Length: 437
Ligand code: ADP
Image 1 (cartoon, protein in one colour):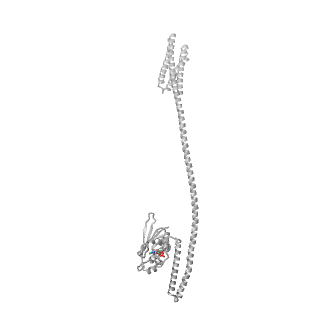
Image 2 (cartoon, protein in one colour):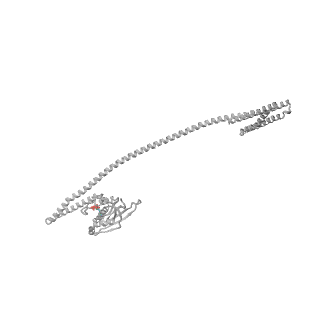
Image 3 (tube, protein in one colour):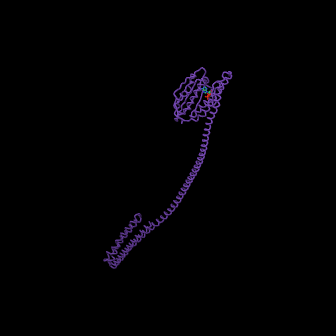
């Protein structure tokens, strides 16, 4: 804009100088009649409108100056016409007339000078206005730059704080992770050493178990050995001295014989009780077949007691067959033993499927008899080793049979319960999983 103002002033001044050139060439021609000077006048006269037009294009955005320029151009034209008129009238006018013509022409030139001065002043005013505007803009720009810098600094500061916070969080989370990792490491170490201890204890237990088994085997074997001798010699005495013995003597020897038998049974029972956890070969076991095998084992007793045995449909389950056979044998033999005098034993074996939501189905096997039963007070105790609900003199036994049954059932992750009404019979209920192991 500043350049624009200077350019307007320069062009106006140049136009005015060209006018002065035209005037001086016209005067020289009038005085000397030199054709060169006339040509110079014509040249300047032709240039002048072009110069004025070039100023026009600079003033388009300023209506006041456009108006001033229109006046200036009119004056320029008037002056050029006047200069030409004077040239045209020279041959016919007197010196006095010429003088007055010059004076009038000079007045127009003065008006043009005044008009150009007016326009230059207007441009100067415009310039100073624009300069102060520029200054204000610069001030404003400086304030804006300052404010923007402060704002940028604040943004940078908060971004720094945020990043610092995040890096602290990151550090904290890294620290947390490190703490966690060290806790996990510590715990893993503890678990590992606990595991090692457990393995050592397991080995120890396995060794102890093996020792116990061999001890049970040797003990039962060694205990039976003197028993066998006592039995042999007792039988010899009975056979050889039968005629010399008193009735009391015979009775006493019979009691010795019975005691030997009981002792042998006891040793066998303890041995098989100790053995239960040894045989753990699980396989698909048909309980109907097991029941048939058990009855086969007890066929003499069944016949002797004239017992009726009703066996319902029985399932196939995953179990240790030898243990299942022992379980069935023990329960049926008890029902054949604890019978009511003068009443044929009736034994029933039934089964019911128990559906579980998780698919771990079970089978309920129910053994019932019509025997002497037992007092409900003993319903838990009879499963403990050597515990009995009846006197030995009436019903001989070791008190180990049901303890073995419970151990077998628990080996198969099941359970066994008993209930009874004395004089009416007993019911033994066993729950066994269908697919254990
Ligand atoms: P044992 O028969 O050798 O005494 P068990 O462990 O087999 O040992 O039985 C424990 C006790 O439970 C028995 O002494 C008896 O009192 C009682 N008992 C077991 N089965 C029956 C049954 N079917 N009826 C009545 N009582 C029973």
